[in-house]
Amino acid sequence: MSSLTTKYIEIQNVEQTFKTKKGPFCALQDINLTVAKGEFVALIGHSGCGKSTLLNLLAGLTMPTQGTLLCANREIAGPGPERAGVFQNHSLLPRLTCFENVYLAVERVFAATENKAHLKARTDAALAMVGLTAAAQKRPGEISGGMKQRVGLARALAADTDVILMDEAFSALDPLIRADMQDQLLQLEKNLSKTIVFITHDLDEALRIGAQIAILKDGKLVQVGTPDDILNRPANDYVARFVQRRTGAAVAHHD
Image (tube, rainbow, N blue to C red; front, side):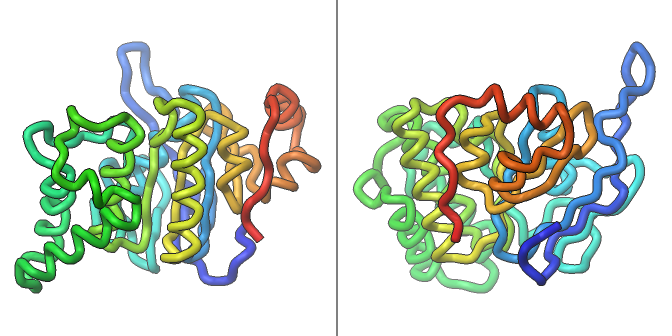
């Protein structure tokens, strides 16, 4: 399913069922997906289709009812140092500066092996990567929503993980800021060769940033393909209708 050859993330026959007052609810059913190292995959679907459930499994925050998830040939059995998350709720500590919020993540990962000068250098470098050097000493209440998202991204980059998992990270942003964040993310992915799984409900966004797009419907994976595949070779009527409803998509960025 991937245009690249090195399998890095493998999702094999995954199902996730939750107990509810009305009985068992199957949130994911028979999910199979391969993501290559350095690949950018956009997971898309309407609310309630299972996107966030799948990302939580990849993050190791929950375990599947059935099936296996692998990262670098190791089973995902919990959070790991090779994976970092960026979420719509950026969860910044309000009393700390942007620098201090990122430094906390760096300290958690590297404090046992590096001195404070190295930790500071890592923090500074991550803030520079997302264009926040000038805002390093500002607190979350003093910066815009887009800048807060960039702090969250800097925190993930500073941890130097191979995989970045992003859940609707840009959905609350104003359209111009959102487009700028998409551009920055694509540039970072190109420069750093990170493996990125990005959840969105916005097809325009998926087409703009995903090298591969995986479409979920009612807990099932209905198509995986390039933006061109999704637009011009929809797998079924659902995907065709999904594509027809989009407006003004800007396709294409990945060579």
